[in-house]
Amino acid sequence: MTGRPRADDRGAVSHIITTHCLSKTYGDRTVVSDLDLRVPEGCVYGFLGPNGSGKSTTMKMLLSLVRPSTGEVRVMGRRMQRSTRRDLLRDIGSLIEAPPAYTHLTGGENMRLVQRLLGLSDGQVLRAVRTVRLQDHLDRRVATYSLGMRQRLGIALALAREPRILILDEPTNGLDPAGIEEMRGLLTHLAGRGITVVVSSHLLGEIDRTATVLGILGQGRMLFQGTREELLARSVPDVLVDTPDPDRTAALAGGWGAVRDGPGVRVPGLDHDTTAELVARLVHEGVAVYGVRREEQSLEDVFMDLTGGGGL
Ligand SMILES: Nc1ncnc2c1ncn2[C@@H]1O[C@H](COP(=O)(O)OP(=O)(O)O)[C@@H](O)[C@H]1O
Ligand SMILES: [Mg+2]
Image 1 (cartoon, helix red, strand yellow):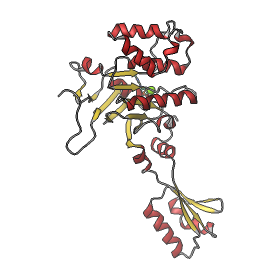
Image 2 (cartoon, protein in one colour):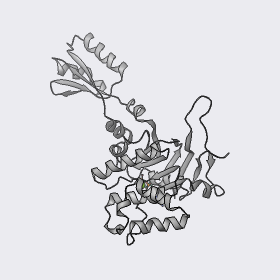
Image 3 (tube, helix red, strand yellow):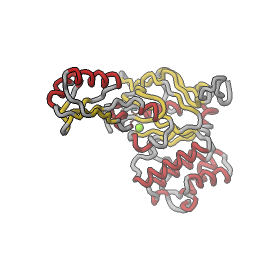
Image 4 (cartoon, helix red, strand yellow):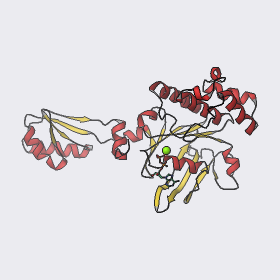
């Protein structure tokens, strides 16, 4: 099979990258475990997880820089293996760990090195440089660039060959808020041009508004994969009971983990059915219930619950 997989008759999303049971073991430690990645074409895929959860290792396996212990990677429907590797990697630009530029050279000199290496046209290089808005800084040595500019140069180097996929490992790491905002804008812009962007971060807040699909890793396992809305749907809100008899309410709802909270009572993580059960019980026991309020979780809370907050 060659070329891009099309959406099937039922209009299912076509995935530009998939993995099946992808695992990596170092010695007796499994650092990536049975990963089934599904990256829809043209999206910004936010690959999230605490430090050490296996994001970089996974991205390196996607790029064939680390050999999977088991499982497979498919890019545009074709299996990544020795015979297809060169061909598939032509369509993937990447920025893994430190920006790859030579700091004693200027930005322009770095771009020319890659241009010569890959046989690119002047137009391709100029387009990449303009995309990351470095055209006015090409004569400066990279050593004088800010971290944000270095990251952008790294992306220009990856973009110059006009790949269909960009894989960026923590490009917002260490950037100030303005740099992070600029990076978000750039990723959205790239996706708008049809480039699929896979971007990792250990901080949900750095990419959640940019990414349309999220994959959340914890200890090498996929804890969640889907849209932001699907993640929010997992939210289990706390329930706040307003009552003149909080002590009795807390005692009656003790089995659900109820605690006194200000003048009322807080019962953590209740779904709809359990909330109804709680109210029925209180009323049955003759407790006056003035009000019941569900306190929705933020996306950050859901993320923290999923990942256990480790390393964040
Ligand atoms: N070459 C390696 N040899 C042994 N262990 C490794 C190697 N590379 C990564 N690890 C371990 O794998 C785990 C996942 O690492 P990594 O993929 O870098 O996580 P993340 O990018 O999410 O921070 C970590 O515990 C790390 O120490
Ligand atoms: Mg990493």
